[in-house]
Image (cartoon, rainbow, N blue to C red; front, top):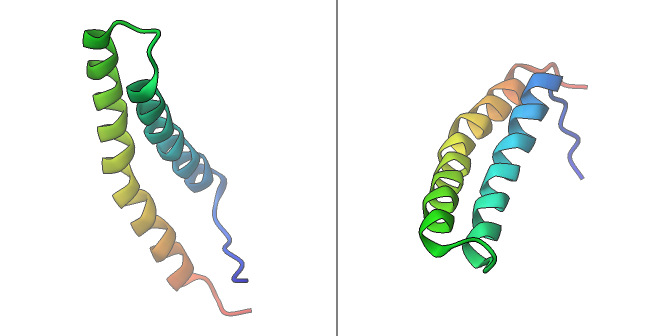
Amino acid sequence: MKNVTMSPPTLIFLVATRAALAAGVGMLVAGKIPESKRRAVAGALVALGALSTIPAALSLRRQNRTAPAA
């Protein structure tokens, strides 16, 4: 297993993007919120989570390239 080291801000950003994506998907399958509101909010959360994954992944990749080999 490969160990990955990241700074606390990067970790928080990565967790937040995953949480937004999961919350959006969860809202899409939930039935307790009126459909018009649910679709709008869920779509925004899914889009936010998916689009913010790209910079998070690039940041993580960049951090691993500049880290000295142990």
